[in-house]
Image (tube, rainbow, N blue to C red):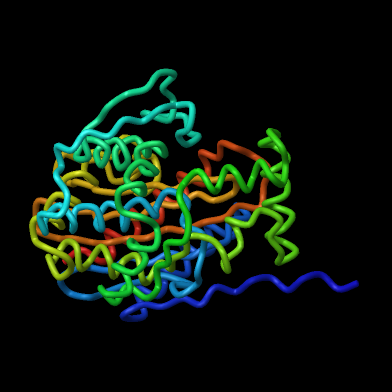
Amino acid sequence: MSAEPAHRPACVAGDGALLDVAEAIARDWAALGVRGSFLARNIDSGEHLGFDVDEQLPLASVVKVPLALAVLDRIAAGDLDPAHPVTVDPAGSSVGPTGLAAFRHPATVAVGDLLLLMLSVSDNAAADALFGLVPVAEVDARLRAWRCDGIRVRHRMNHMYECAAGAAGNDFSLALELAVRDERAGRHTIETLDPAHANLGSAAALVDLLRRVWRDEISHPGATAELRRLMGHQVFTQRLAGELRADSLRLSGKTGTFLHLRHEIGVVEAESGDRVAMAALTRADRRAGLAPDIDFAIANGARQAFEALRG
């Protein structure tokens, strides 16, 4: 039986030198057994580099960025009060290790602070409380109205864990095993990893969303300004920002992690005025909950891309 042919990523870039950078990043990822897509684009010049940029992948917590924009759009339109209190009861809230998802007792939090919890510490309970105010179907419809056709929102955050539990019980290691096995086989035992059912997006679509947010070309300027501010509060910065730590740089981002998926989207801004939007969407061929070497590979690719694309 012949071995499955090695995947050859389709690299894209504005010129030959940038193409070399894209190919180097793709090689680094492949050496770690990582498949995925990457795109970096200078927001102002349009120069870009990446690979497999149109591949659609499950988003995990990256979906919280379009959710936040939809909520902020409602706030900017005067249809939702950011001070409106929402009570989250752990007995019926979403699974997760951070924020309200880790609480043991009911808590009442304002809508604006739910947004902060969702984007800063990736709080799943805060996200699903916001989905209770702006439903999944409305968020997806808003994306269609904004012509964000490469991003789909189909389910709440907790549905990922419900589907994993349905396939593997409470054995998260088995769920990871199934995710890796199914990735190789091209089938999906866990429904929310199936592109036909998952919250979905491509690097190209996500970078375009970030570009429009940073240029105030989508929703309301008040909504996009607040989204930029909130994304700047992200606590988990080991991926895109891992090799871009300098007082002259600022990264506003959002990670997404679930089973074998490790993602981040974000914008790197320099005091010089350079602004580069990036999306790194990865899935690993290993059975490990923690993978600092993959985080480093994402960070190293982000550094290479930023250095190549800055003016």
